[in-house]
Image (spheres, one colour):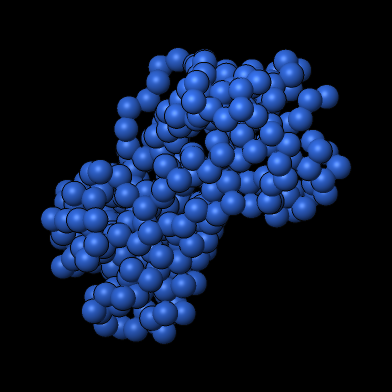
Length: 321
């Protein structure tokens, strides 16, 4: 069996166009000024399985992977095949099995495995070439909590010493959603010193329309009691913002709204005060690091188990950056 690398990247979402095809193949040849060692011109087959093409963040991520392979200057030819998992684990597993059967040299696969799964690979399988590239979703959750805790009123609009909030979760089976949900609240409590009360938590599947629906229902049910709406990503936060406006509420005055990703629309809303904050999910550095690790793997270099890319808090103070 050929050397095989499984690289996994975070599955957060961003707002941009999506491909209508399920498979894309790119052939990239590095420029001639490559080093003598690389001039052997290996042909490298790269399989990329994206869990969902119409996931906004993953569109940026996969496009950047494709673009970055085109900038490599090592003399190799990279045949990159990108496939759509269509949000179906069985579909993505089948794609991975096919990549292996077709002797692909390196795989880039989305979704962070559990710590238990990572520890299960002791270097015996795949000649030790198994690693994770991505951002720690716990950090993004903590940053959301800190943004609220750092507000002048700590988000406690009614001054009762307890933050009443609604949580709009992505996919509860996704570790990013789990960590963002958990750590946004635990970090808020630690930093603010206040208690919290969860009024509702609903699954929004990273979707803007679902975010709007959940927020609208909760604002109708709980009214002014809702002080903060936490969303696991910006797409759902944009939907929640629509519901907030429809309910006659004003972000920054009688409610706060948080997201994750730093979508262009979210940044514009933070700048004009219609969204409290977000957390930048750095698709560029994640994609570049994944490609760099893939190249190291096919060159026989040893990889670390994890390669982390930091999130960045985004508020009115730094949104212009």
